[in-house]
Image (cartoon, rainbow, N blue to C red; front, side, top):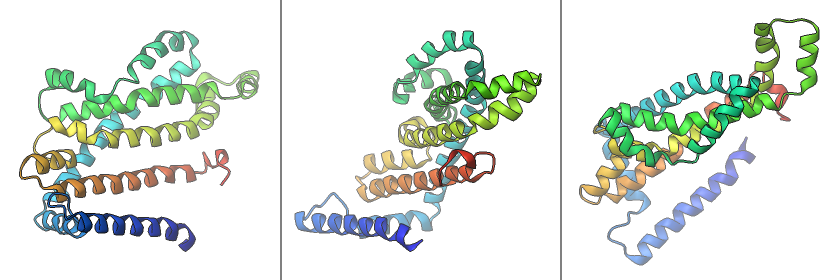
Length: 250
């Protein structure tokens, strides 16, 4: 365990030391030192503001991501199994997938107004298309001999999905979830530019606009990164499930 933790810990310490030395050496009056960032973070944590922002961001990302899972996995499975559905819908999703969630902001405001629904919609848009494509691709990678063997035994379509297709494609779905959850968390700042007065994205923008509190700007960025790492670690725990462990070499 120590061998895994020590190298990244050393790199982090070196980066923080380099950051501190650079700020002190340049005598910057705007860019904060690590100590100022920690002080600003503790200030927000003590009055409860920080926890409110974190909770709001997690709620929006969690809701948008969950909605994307509900839509994307059945859609991807369907497209993977039905050639006509894949031929018809895949070009549309491939067109929509590269569009930045930021480009959807005017439409989100037009359709849903300024509030929680708009950032949830943006996070949903950022998540759903990559997950659909990943799930459909996972179905296409299933070896045909497994499907033919099941069909030779005369299994029903329900049993085929439950005992063959879903176990085979589940590792790909988990990979898609990891990727799309990272993307969803990535766009939280842009999504919360149009949110109510809460969320880490709002905190960063408000700190910049209301008094140049760059200590809180940097604090928000670091917190987003740490929570993103924790979310990725939580998603990776799914790889330890018995039904998907066969897919991974270690």
